[in-house]
Every structure is written in C-alpha cells, then in structure tokens.
Image 1 (cartoon, rainbow, N blue to C red):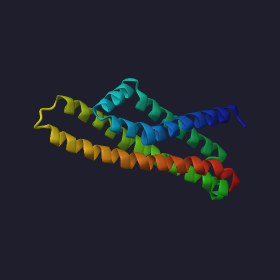
Image 2: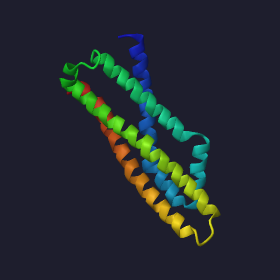
Image 3: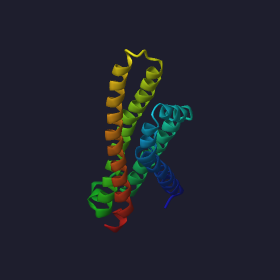
Image 4: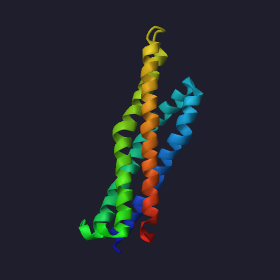
Length: 170
C-alpha cells in the first residue's frame, strides 16, 4: 500500500469522524438546545459563525469526500466496473453515494438555511412590532427546512458510515 493511499485513508477517517460527529451534534443536541433557548440561542449561533464552525465542517466534509474518491479510484484500478460488481465495491459505493448526498444537502441546502436563520434573527432583533410576524413566519419556514434536510443529511451519513464499516465483510 502506498504512502499516499495511507495518507488518504488517515485524512478520510479522521475528517469523516469529525464531519459525522458535527452533523449529529448539530442535529440532535445543538439545534434543539438553541431552539429551546429562544432569543439567547441566536447568540450561540452567532458565535459559531464567528468561529467559522460551519466552514470547518464543510472543509472536513470536502476532505472526506475527496480522499474517499481518491481511495475508490485507487482500489478500483481507475474506476473499473468489475470492482463495483464485488460485494465490497457495492458496500463502499453505497456509502459513497450516501456521503455525497449528505454533502450536497449540507453545502447547498443546510448551510445557506443556517445563515438565513441567523440573518432573520438579526432582523427580528431590530424589527418593529409590525414587521415581526412576517419575519417569524420566514423563521418557521427556514427552521422546518433545517430540521427536515439536516435530519436527512444525518441519516445519509449514518448510512455511509454503516456501509463503509461493514463493506469488507459482505
């Protein structure tokens, strides 16, 4: 096994663990806690933005997907169809597909919705009483989207981890 492949595997596993852990933490612990905190929850979200937490998660996700694609290319001798027909190839491919779907949802739906929610929170803080119902309605719609799509991304990541963990034993 080449040193580059070992490095890719190290990057893939370490950034993947961070990515999956961050998504599960956000969806099942942080998100509900922020919502329960009410207006003070927005302060927590603003601090996470200030510390570039979401960019760090997207960066880890990007490294995970890129290193995974490299390893599949190397393992499959340049994406040879025969490799994908094996049980191992099918297990890894299932995990790859689930991870890529989670990545797409996270980058193109969840992250923009998070920033939208933070912006709406800022607007709410400065809004006149007459403008608040419209902003609240937008917040509810954005929150619903975050919960739904964020939950789907979390499920896809759990499928990815599970498929990759057992692929060798199929």
